[in-house]
Length: 328
Image (cartoon, rainbow, N blue to C red; front, top):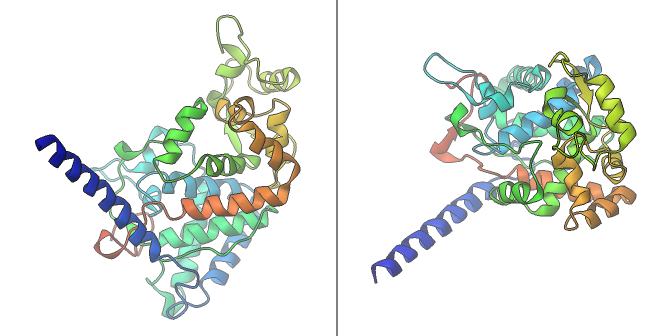
């Protein structure tokens, strides 16, 4: 009987968690700020466009910032918070040290532009500004535009210990497990992975695939041979770890479905990319989206919208930060 009661307790607790998260995400809606800051999306877009004109890095940096934020404690801008003497924040976790400063700078400048409008001052969360900016950089790079849901509050905690992100070496089971824990499907995983169609990585993130993959195969046999040789020339053994390599060797400045065509050719930079083609469970989707950009864009919009609903903070679980980099 005791075991049955324990089951009921655990079951009701898990239902409660999902019910609460559904309630939280239910507050998200388009035009959330219509009555307090009706022009917020234009204000953010103008700032993002100016930043984009200064450097293309704005695009991958902002997308990656949004992903690293949402996948850890939800979309609450906790990844932007700076560490203090008493707390090591998310941004100083080893997995976040490679986040480009242009992503943070984009959000901080957009927040300043929003707060410069008297009616908008301290009315729009950093989390929502990051969500809008992410949509805008994707569109600026030639990707799909979409209506962004708003209504998130900023989180009240940010700790390095809470960071648990997908690794470049992950296999499909590991990827599926991590994405499923956030309410994301395998299709969402494949679509969101295509954000690697823009941006760059550092040699140490994939060097094992070109130098010491296994005893029998120093080079990962799923890598295209010419591509592997190209990577070795750009990443010699004792390369400066700051050297950056485009993740898409063909159209690194376009948000497009060429990512999937690269996978078909053995040109996925990470193991976690190439596995989407080598694993029979995901290969048909890769093949479909490699030839059908409309189907990919539709799936991507659905996936990034779902990701934007993860761990939304409401009520007393969050607030609107005056400064995105520190708690009020």
